[in-house]
Length: 369
Image (cartoon, rainbow, N blue to C red; front, top):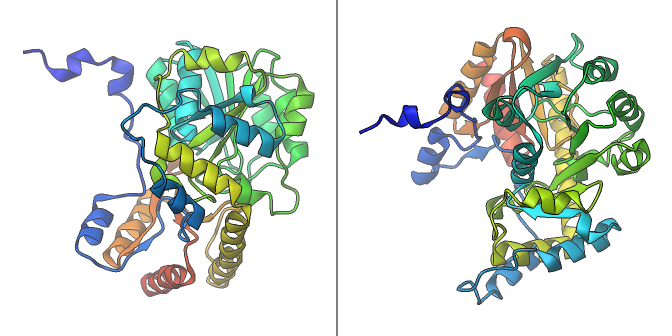
């Protein structure tokens, strides 16, 4: 019998494993009934709108396949965003849209330019196809240089991927900075702006939707957004892409499954979208808590990246020190996520939770100092 590794392409065998915030330690703690501070996945700790649960209970036709075109969802989203619904691709999380785009657009040997570190799946998708990842590191002051990213993009790229705010650091580019970066690209470079944390970031001074400047740029683009964060639908897996041209959507869908977003998830999305007041309340509480956490970290002289999302990221000179902190916090049932950063450095990303979760995080951190 053939060994499994011989069936898989070498580019896949060499890939790192994506690190989720749902670790075996967390699952073990949950199974034991322990009280935990779940701060590793940037989830919404306040939950979805009550209307979502009502909508879920009203679904009775799960024996039938869903609308594969997500028609009602796209119409509602189009009205909310004031754009043509045919420019929308809805899928099981915005990362699935990203995957479909990479598979459809990218060829072996082509370049993908992005920040480093950024959303890990971008590098995994690039390398699995046999394409080349080109990363631009953060500066010594923990900022990212728009000029440096523009310069790398100017060297040529099939895809320019910008996570804005950037996951896992939390930095964000202003509209002027984005304009500088995008204008440096070739007219044939596909610009992907991942705005998974848009609902949080747009409350910060200087941050705006990238759509107006992208429309004016005359560059092909896709903007990614999700219902997993501020809307609280992480467990239902729903996200979407806003495409610069409606004709690109069916081309990308050719490589996708026929039925991806289930009936329950579609109903939940419509209910969540209809309750903007709930989403805004979640964002209000999260941003208030984030400011409190940031001030507490500042008092302790902890270096933190700029924070435009629903999380804070602590900088470490060595990656292994970040891992040590992650493990030490897990022993206290406080679960965060340690990740590699620039040239052997590391970071610990902690979701902004409810006040009691943030208190546990800060108290545990103080106990380990």
